Length: 427
Image (spheres, rainbow, N blue to C red):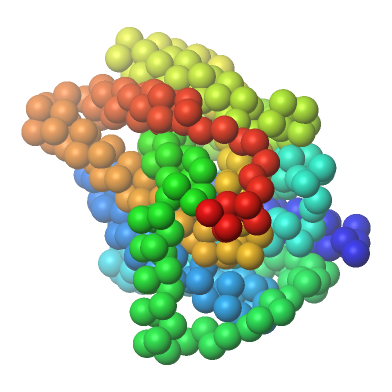
């Protein structure tokens, strides 16, 4: 029986990890990097750091998924990854920049692993009938954590990065506790060893077999490939929006400190619309299905990236960025509200952990290629080509627009119809 406490605990974990993703990944760690290495090199340095972190989790995601399918429960994995992330985050900005960069790599990898474990627990707190609504509520409530993350940063004036990151770590830990206490898993009826060379070999072989025999899982491979492209764009814009906002502010005559504050306010604008979007899109998913919902959301993202690039090229007033942020917030809420239920439609019930490992793996791959592509574009246009930081970033945003278009085209042939897994196994 699914209890209200379990549903509430699962939703609150979305709030908890959003505090980290917004406060660290999306806003303040990139600003900390800019302060440490200078604005001209910030995009490249932050892109490299992020790519290394995501590269690690990309390589181990399938193994982690297979391990959780073997384990009696997934919760210990979620607890461990959360503790590692919080411990590392609390130590940011307390020593040389290189140490903070290494800690960020570990913390972000642990956070990403935790998201994978958390997503795979969605069936434990939902039914097929309410999955879109509960997932949407999780997205909406989760973005409330962003208010906490950005709000704390705005209250610290002047900014104390070491104190800020410690506060974020503490909030993440506190809001994660209800999920750990109240979500009761049905448990694995056939647990097997989760460590050892044999486990690694078997899980790797099983993952490769899944990829080779994609026809047994209709739409899976095409969905995963399409997901690489649209999550590439979404994850990258989240990671670099603060740097972009700061440069827009400077281009219209504001100082660096005011640019930082404008970045916070614009993120709050995006968050407000993401909260509403999460609730609304969850309702839409249950009515028209995750595929049609995601198609609409990707069209919205195309408009967002086109408008955002125009702001940089034309040096438009910063008020236009608030409009873009609002639309991006709606897009964020819709992306994750449709994305998780879509994947579950393509996943056999007995291999949720493994398939979410693949799901996580392509998300991490996109989070490697996105920052690398952004860093390469800004390097060529700014450091080599002599363009302004803002113009270089506008060119980078156009590459993200292209990614969304490619992902949209790839997904056109994927359906979200219910699969008859017993019949497919018999083939």
